[in-house]
Image (cartoon, rainbow, N blue to C red; front, side, top):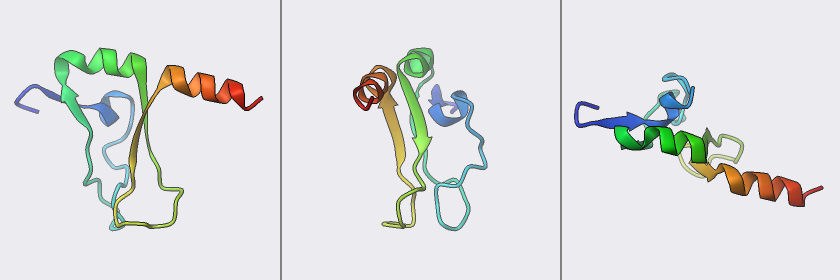
Amino acid sequence: MSLGLADIWLESGGRSTTQTHKDGMRLDYALTDSGSIQTMLRKYKMYIDNTVPMLSDHCPIILSEKALDGLIMAGKD
């Protein structure tokens, strides 16, 4: 972080204790430069997908475009 990076998960309201690894730790991160963080938060949402059976010992970090999510959800009606 001292190099000017921002943790997208924390900046979007996530907790630092959210598990991304089966041992109950947060080992995986998505970072961007701190100058871009507000743009990232406006355009994208992030979630940690722990719904799939353990394909790995890490959970996927999903960054999806908010506009696409709205279009996809509208198409399901």
